[in-house]
Image (cartoon, rainbow, N blue to C red; front, top):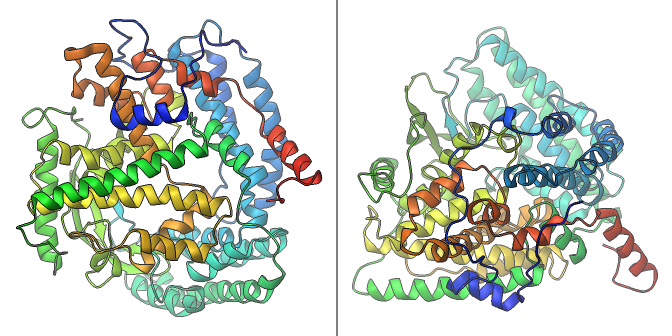
Length: 614
């Protein structure tokens, strides 16, 4: 493998201080201008062998639809992955462009992610909630709803869609029977997730697996009204039958729980490998903890600064009615998009294919989550569903949605996930178009929570709304601090739920983390790893600082933002190379360490009296 030209290894503390306080970044090249990309090359401008390998490798990813053979899929992936890995390593990248070398690293990270899934997460053999959620989501994917409903299928359901829903219900038994066969090393804490939170939507009292029959029946009775015959007459009985299979599976989990010996936590060496090879984050878990501690302190400090400015103003509270919230939401959607564009702050280019975003009320039907039965077409509008006014997420959520929509509108919709998703799906580069980097995505969206506060966006609820983003910042820091403690086995799941609520209490106009919210926040750590909203945002800040010091007064926020989003859903460490010409962070992730080496070292350490097997 061709090595890059130089290595820079700043100390952890200096690195973190540079990130948070925008001091002069280590490793800046002595250059007046770095390459500033405008156009993304299309498939004809890439090495043909890279494009072919990417397309072929991605055919083995995912589970497929219906009731696939999960063990068979895992077996095929284990068989094919070494072949794809060998082909990747055989590529000569020495004369490739920066863009092409980054694409190479993206494909390598996808192979590393699959390897980690197969040999560490091992969802099919460790995680009972995997099968429960697969069975429920197999039905849910055919339904009209979800938080981002966008352009829905209008009611009534077509006969074809109705038959697909009935078929998915019939698949339930097959999926769960595979779980009984495949779960050779089940983790009791992951069995608890299946029992407490089937389906994986917003955790809600009454949604536990013990209530699955009544919940499926309620959903089917409402949905049948939007079916035609003969499917309408079949839906309730099919739903109840599927729910009974889920309930039986839950009873089997409860009876087996005391005999489950799988561990929910991971060796820290594996977590470091995952961050470095899958996310291409150039930081250790120790550095991530330090960054989170500093961000936690900054969030509470800036919250106090805002609270002091607002000390003569009353706190603001969530909307009392749908009508009140929707009025605030419509106003925010119009204001925020205009504020970002040329006639406002001139921060970001619009795209002509991006539709308007409007919220509307939905039903929350467990275990499928947000459901809608729309009969009216709304051309040019993406439709966002809201939980009912009596749902805990409307009344209690600490994230501030219902107190001022602007607190999270920029994160979720424009210019957040909706905006970035539409742009990434249209990326001319076939490698990047099919790649999703969660740290880039969440970092971009979290960055756009803080940016409006820094630039004095006029929140519809007034100055007190400016406090809420700092409470969300605190919440994201705790995701890392407590998430790493949980994922490394230093605390139990129950301790994590309690600690999260204690560390995100009611503050200023914030309501504190509800019990349900604490459960949601910590649950995902066990099956997906630590959330990196904060890490991605701080990497963007660091890149912004680097670019500012290169261009001085020629630096332009709009150009910077357009580059970040146009180049694709790419780790920020790689975009730092592509945008600013700085390769010091790429050096840290370029030379790989195979996962098998880490697993062998861990096993050897355990055999010689090292850390307990995890």
